Amino acid sequence: MYCRLDRADAAARAAMRLAQPNFFLTFDRLGIDPFTQRFAITLIAEGTVRGTGGIRLTGDDCATTVPGLYAAGDAATRELICGGFTGGGSHNAAWAISSGGWAGQAAARHARSHSGGARIRRTVPVGGAGLRPTGTPGPADGFREVVAAVQGEVLPYRKNYLRHGDGLAASLRALDDTWHRLRATLYAGDGDAVRARQAAAMVAHARWMYTAALARTETRGMAKRLDFPAQDPGQHHRIVTGGLDRVWTRPEPLTTAPREVA
Amino acid sequence: MIELVSAERCIACDKCVKVCPTNVFDRGPDGVPLLSRREDCQTCFQCEANCPVDALFVAPVTHPLPDDRAVRDERHLDRTGLLGSYRRHIGWGHGRTPGALRAVGPRLPAPDGRPPAPPITS
Image (cartoon, rainbow over all chains, first blue to last red; front, side, top):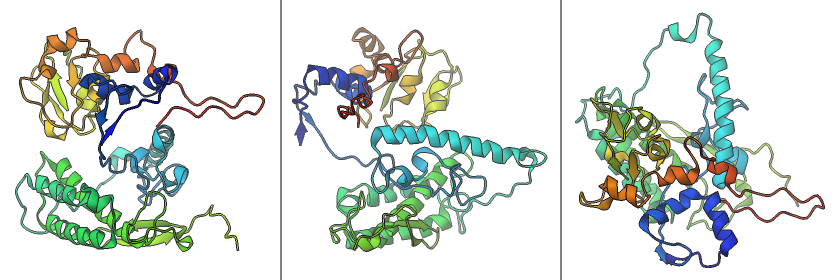
């Protein structure tokens, strides 16, 4: 599919260049004038960057359900500012800056609240997946296989964009297998500990994503189901998900939901 | 994807090493960053935007290009104005006007209450 921005007049062209230098960067480097020349377009999965949802916030200071952990930006849920749809660049940028400020202040306050200082606390390592396998550790580059397995279930449009209950369930079975395998074997040693942990987090995230998608048997906002194309007024709520070895979901009522009109 | 790290221009400030969200670089023995995990590059251009001496070039494609391509030819990139062009466009760097100040954003409603023109944004 090809595109050309041929309806922008001279003033709009100049304004667009000033407002979105990032957009024109690619065209300038490829030697394409997007206002006069056709360019190929495609869909690309940006994960949660242009999505909604994220780590659940429990307070105005961006606190989470984990004491001392504060979430900001794309990692934190943006449902609070834009509901079931992405906010786009402006909302998301404003959210990144403001939530980062609030979360940072709260984290500093939390660190200061420890008598004797946060640095001299006794800490206990608790991370499991990717760090402390329950069985015989696999190869040090096992994270590559894990990442490829997640990508195989979340990148194809027919699985993640054209969502259907059957496909979601099949992907979830594959991801569950990957999770249980990595729990037993994924270990990368000190050098690539972060990459192994990231790979484990991708699997956990994908399982939360598809479990929540299966729990929403309707189409609402960015959550679309081919097998449930209509919006169901009975599901006007958020879905909270979590869990590692066993993933769970539960509906969370909206505190600001408009009253039902008879 | 990151294509060029100019050892000649690099001042070993480590900014790219620190700013890369996917940890592509390691500081080399002489301070010049090494592309240790190039396949993790997401083509976000952050390293290039933060390089104070325009020593980096990110090609606008998400896969590595063949070795003989012009994107690794520093003199060609310099001559054609491509090297450092992102920083120039966003107005980052000493003596420049930040792009955020020049951007056309949403206008406030007029005093007579007429709605403003829709903003050009994404």
